[in-house]
Amino acid sequence: MSKIIAVTNQKGGVGKTTTAVNVAYFLARRKYKVLLVDFDPQGNATSSVGLDKESLKLTVVDALDESTDLAEIIQKTRFYELDIVPSTPALADAEPGLAKVDIGQRFVRLRHALADVAGDYDFVIIDSPPSLSLLTINALVAAKYVILPVQAEFFAMEGLTQLLNTIKLIRQNGLNPTLDILGVLPTMVGKNTLAKQVVEQIAKYFPGKIFNASVPRNVRVAEAPSFGLPVGAYDKRSKGGRAYDAVTKEIIERTR
Ligand SMILES: Nc1ncnc2c1ncn2[C@@H]1O[C@H](COP(=O)(O)OP(=O)(O)O)[C@@H](O)[C@H]1O
Ligand SMILES: [Mg+2]
Image (cartoon, rainbow, N blue to C red; front, side, top):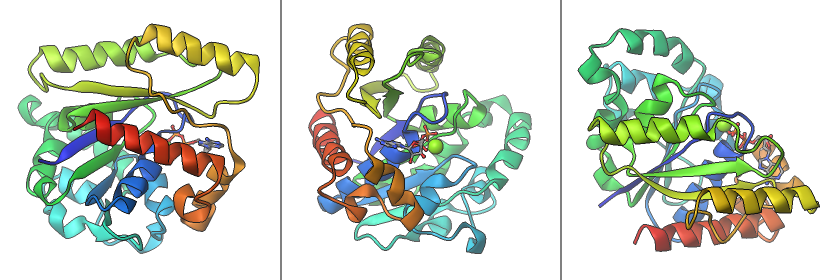
């Protein structure tokens, strides 16, 4: 069965897209069939795997309004076993329309769109926008697991209570009763004492949920997207590349 994982945190710039792209890439390198769903209007995941956003004919928006099957929107990437559902800023324009959809449909559009194609993949990785929007809720409703990237900086925990409450509500009201936090991933971990303290604080706040691996702040990770490459393809031996490989291994173990 396909394992659907949403990468979520309503804060921007915490490493969601980087995590979604690199976990998807390293899963595919391990010969799993992977679908990366770019569910952020910024479309950064789309360009991070080498697609040209300007030339896209169909994007995730066309599945959200039910005009097109997701199967027609999926594109192959240059990476073996890694496919993508691309996104563009048009996704932001689609949100008000989604808010007007019947309440029984509003939260489940992405889940329904994925239902027909998920079976073709071992993993579906959903990148989500930096907000607690309808889009994020659609991602959380479609997923079985959530990964929470948390930037190892002061204010890291800010907003997490709100996100956890949203996850709780989604479980309780029957939208997605088995939604599970797969793990909390410290990202951009610097060598300073503060970063160490924040990681300890995260571990305390999420007992048993923090990944053993964490992602160091590493310039190769930041450079890779400008080449349309995940860091694993850009510089596999970099600290960032090795960290995401280790995180991916843990994800495989935790979803077994
Ligand atoms: N481990 C890292 N080391 C250095 N830069 C990073 C790292 N992770 C992410 N970045 C950079 O930080 C910025 C924000 O990351 P991103 O994944 O886009 O966050 P989000 O999707 O949560 O907004 C991007 O420019 C990205 O390249
Ligand atoms: Mg992002």
